[in-house]
Image (spheres, rainbow, N blue to C red):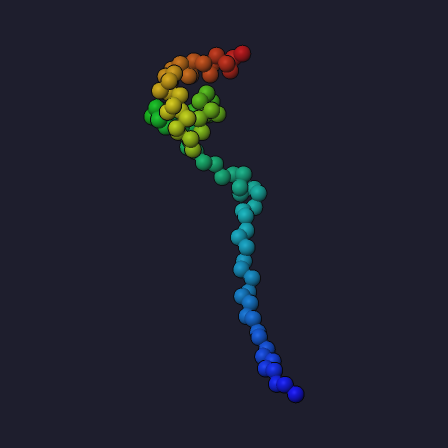
Length: 87
């Protein structure tokens, strides 16, 4: 009868790689990054806790403040935001 070569093929599998673990929830909540908002960074002033500009100009998007600053001016933006917060 016909001879067929039956070869056993073994596949080596790598051990499962360890999955990165996320930090425990209590540690993640305590990590605070103190970075001034984009407006305070560009204006080179201290960004306080109650900074009116911080919610609108996050530190990761300085181009937003740069554009608004060129059109309206920093003092007018601050006046507008302060007036709207009192309403």
